[in-house]
Length: 208
Image (cartoon, rainbow, N blue to C red; front, side):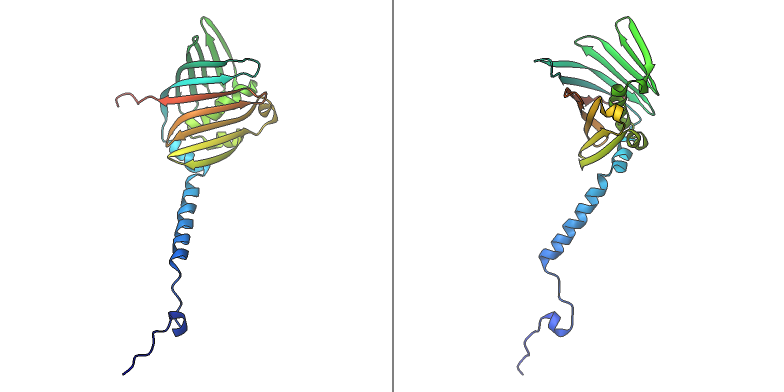
């Protein structure tokens, strides 16, 4: 008995199977949407907030438009949640900047000067960008900056633009980059065109 030819599924009243290319495209879109969710500010801050304290070495290169040479410095950074941040410059000369809450203390040699952090717009923008990122403080960053996150948790970049005009008049943008819960680089662009790049090498926690 001759067999009837096999009809396509759509002609037999059944829905046609989607082409393989369409299936792969949908899968790619679903994976992409999951990656996008991982790049939201809140997700990045949750990862950073898991580290409550840390220390690191830094090297910084500053470009000053009025100078023909690059200024270099190096030293140590440390922070402790919720609001303590210390930058200790060792070279080319010893300097120390310590911030606790809204108190900023500057030391150079035997001289020391203490002031309110929010009285200095440039210091406020730079300190809050770094301190807020280190401690995973979403509310702090959203209060002071418009933000944009790119990359992945394995290698991310956070761009911060000051909201307030007085801060924006001093600091045009701060760009913080890192891997997972570790900051690795801070780029600062001042309103007058001067800029700096600080590279950070986290130190292992004591006992590790």
